[in-house]
Length: 445
Ligand code: GAP
Image 1 (cartoon, rainbow, N blue to C red):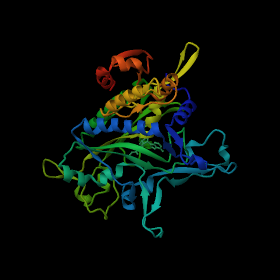
Image 2 (image 1 turned 90 degrees about the horizontal axis):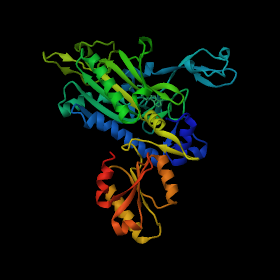
Image 3 (image 1 turned 120 degrees about the horizontal axis):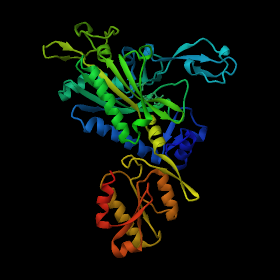
């Protein structure tokens, strides 16, 4: 059973070093979090799993890692300067500010000001002079630099539609209302794919990507039964979208968006392109006299064609919250309780803990280090030499942080070349010969 409340998860994240409030020693900053020793491993494992599924396991997707600081023109022509806003209201009695559609119960509606539009993009200075003109934005989505690099990628890889460009990276939004720990924050990471297709095939590709993404979530331990699909109504669609399906997850605070899969049509490539009149664009774009590239391909009749884009866009931080929530289990064993994180092994921050039974026995410690080095060299992720605390405490800690197996080295190991392998979920222990250990370990993944 997943965690029943967010407080359990927050406490575990702090206690075991997954996630900390940012700048905590100075009182913290709202909407900013730091990922600790285990958090960074979990995050990397989730991102690697996404990259493997979206890039490596396909032959039609290329990767990209573009700059975060984004030139103003990019976000002018993308439509973000004009439309990436939320309605802001002030409460005249309590002095707090809210998003107009997210005013909490405790606030009296009659004390609110009229809503005014607030742009969510962060700005920063470029170069030493702060003249208010030479600024850049911190990107509000990773997608835009995929569009601006479309021609570079096509020219350097000879790709033709259908194909995609994937990117994982930070995005920034000056959110008015923050929510539920890492659910809605001001600095977060996105895993985005822009998949370019022939116009007319876009609706089929849209359906296909919704299916593919649900399957991926299942493999990360977020089952279909905890997910819902939400077809965003026409009047709520983002300015670039013809249709969006949100994958909604039952977070501890309620059912909310985990990932959005949008049909962005030819809006973005069309908006960033020169010679727009020659392209036969289907969407309505602003005239662009600044771009120096034609973001289009030639079709089989040698006519210009601007591909439509299907965009699966998932938040890494929301993925962490959903995956931790699903993995969290509180179990009663006789009269004791144990917290266990039943993470899929490929996501576990630590893949195996190697525990010498006697911390001050040189031979046992040396053998434990030898086994650690051997398993570490297999490249499956972090293997930890665990030389602190007693064995019971070690098991409890590794249950709580989701380590799939603990391997104990004792006197018998020295004589018989065997170790004890303890399974996180069943707590069963078995004796395994060192020569079989590599296979037992690899079989977990
Ligand atoms: N490029 C499309 C795009 O950015 P979005 O629905 O605004 O679409 C995509 O964002 C995903 O990014 C969301 O489904 C969510 O997982 C994540 N996300 C968006 N805003 C966020 C925030 N303030 N904090 C954490 N994650 C966020």
